[in-house]
Image (cartoon, rainbow, N blue to C red; front, side, top):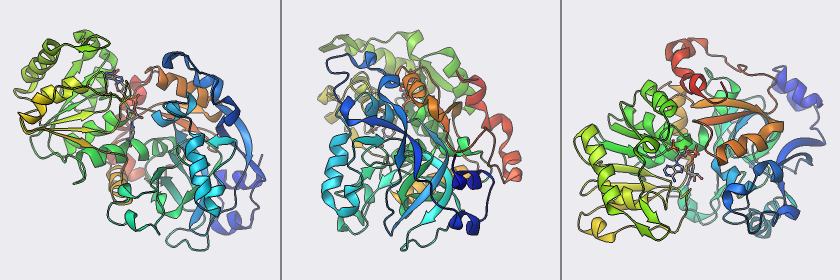
Length: 448
Ligand code: NAP
């Protein structure tokens, strides 16, 4: 037990927190360098995050002048922790070693363990000497865009920076821990009407979907646009649905069960396709796609909304990309940020060029976009898709659930917070948004 973390739990003042010593070690969820090859030769599905993720004590690193230490009240599971835990497509120790060679401060990250996690809500417990705008005891959420602001390439769109990294995936000391180390330019105000765990599950996925569907850097939705959203009740999909609705667009959500379809309808997504019920087989075999199945999906979309989608929100990758390129409207955009089912993509290029379509790549978001996405939460225009809450000790189990697509929305993880439902200070906004809307995923979730 740590005196500092007890003080955080008790809501101590900035003076008390500053005067209380940092603990020598804290708990963090790690993968270990020695385990890097433990799953060699196994199919992805059999690689078990419960075997590779460990909760262990680690020493807090020295803090750089532009950094802060945050006591993590809650965190969340993202798909990047699935990738890290199964060492696919590559081990993340390569990322840490590369960062380690860059600078003295970078060297802190190259260790034989990797503290993972790319989301957090919490309380600042230390600020570096160069930090402006944030102070000890501030309640924050953390976005995962880690950039060196002395690099000129980071000053148009920081996602274009040469050394852009994802905190807790390509850097050490991530969010699945009692205390995390982040740059001050990753901080955002915690939405005061949300509990710690509700506040912790948004920054990574909400910001990603915001860039893809709202920002000028993605494929911004305008009124009336029809938007096909794969995995629409998953992490990024559930935010995508909300952003499309807020922009006046018409989402067509694809899911794989009636329970997930019910979540979408409650969220306001009128048009839902259950891909399991439809039984699409876009691939006849490992090497051959079936255009008639793409056409069947296209007809199903038209029968729901009367036309082809202006935008396709794509991330499953190899399984769906051929279909996504085919069904997009003439002149439409396929915006993609991932390839869960495989990154060697195949599509029929004739459908792209003859119909003047665009494939747009997107990755997380810059600070401005993350901040704007956070504001949608503060304003209550977007709600956290929290479906289940696990303890930090159960991070491996929670990651396993995600790896096997047995979750909805987002899984929250309690770190320093002792119980659910804590941290809410703005009851008026909470009442305005409404408990019913805030609990849509929780009521339907596997963890309910
Ligand atoms: P998630 O919560 O697991 O949701 C993904 C959903 O996609 C699943 O729930 C599933 O929904 C659907 N899906 C999975 N495989 C599919 C397939 N073969 N065909 C059709 N649908 C499929 O994950 P997430 O957090 O939304 O992340 C999704 C992907 O985006 C991951 O690969 C992640 O690494 C990536 N990502 C990238 C960024 C970035 O910045 N580049 C940011 C966030 C996430 P149904 O079974 O209901 O259809």
